[in-house]
Image (tube, rainbow, N blue to C red):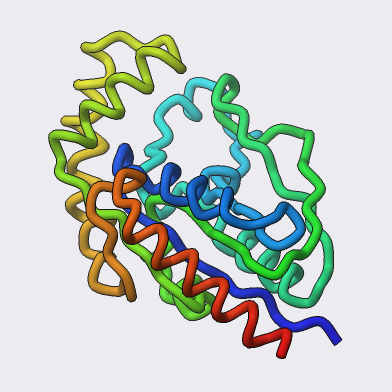
Amino acid sequence: MAKKPIIIGVAGGSGSGKTSVTRSIYKRFTDKTILVIEQDSYYKDQSHLPFEQRLNTNYDHPFAFDNELLMQHLRDLGSQKPIEKPIYDYKIHTRSEETIPVEPKDVIILEGILILEDERLRDMMDIKVFVDTDADLRIIRRLLRDIKERGRTIDSVIEQYVNVVRPMHLQFIEPTKRYADIIIPEGGENHVAIDLMSAKIETILSGRTN
């Protein structure tokens, strides 16, 4: 009988480097061993709402996420059942009709800004990580990303950061740091922390095969 996968949560604010940490760990293992589940894929379906109303969605608030579906998918993967991971379409601000088939693997990295906010999700994790990066670096990274990859203007990114991202970070994301087993400063640049995380995963996996 296959063993339950290891679930590692990687949280942190927008621009903290949590995606870089996740990718760095992912590259240390084979595709057959590890998979990544992004919390961003589990924004709630808003197809029942008018488009104008969807534009007002606060994507940094816990209510934006469909944690019920996310937890069900984690349970399914834990029972060695494949899932159909949702795709969120930011152009229409709702879930796409398409999905991504995902097969169970030995390690699941769950990555997202608010994965440590829900106690039920925390209880499903074997290792909880918080990527802790100074606010000035996070806003610079977000500026560069949104301008380059999403065609945003500097003014729109700053306005969103001041009015939504920063207050949501202080209210909901930063407090979840206390639930972390491991805090990684500076994200993907912290190679020592990534080495330690990878070694820990290897130790757990090798212990399961003995």
